Length: 120
Image (cartoon, rainbow, N blue to C red):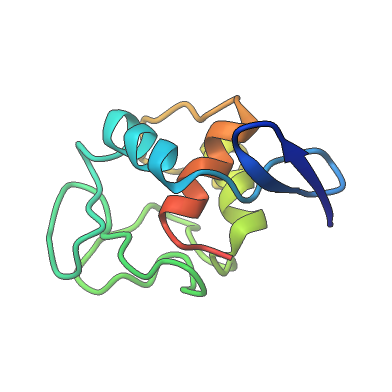
């Protein structure tokens, strides 16, 4: 993993393919509110349309108790690299996902959200 120092932002870790997997948690919180909060919560125990994302780091996909997942939503553990891939294009990772979110094309924004969620 490479690291870059970006003026005014700090150190951002980069995967070999160039995707940001760490970023600014405050920016990530703002992006999460704009893109994700309508369906997902980060408050433990809070129910919404989508699965709760509190403590998602290290969790196996499709295992949130009480949530009916899309067919085939298994085989992945949520780490920074997998979450980055999923946030970029959810349907490429899980073709039958019911989630209507088209994805985040901006790698830095994905990294910010991943950092906000506390996923390593």
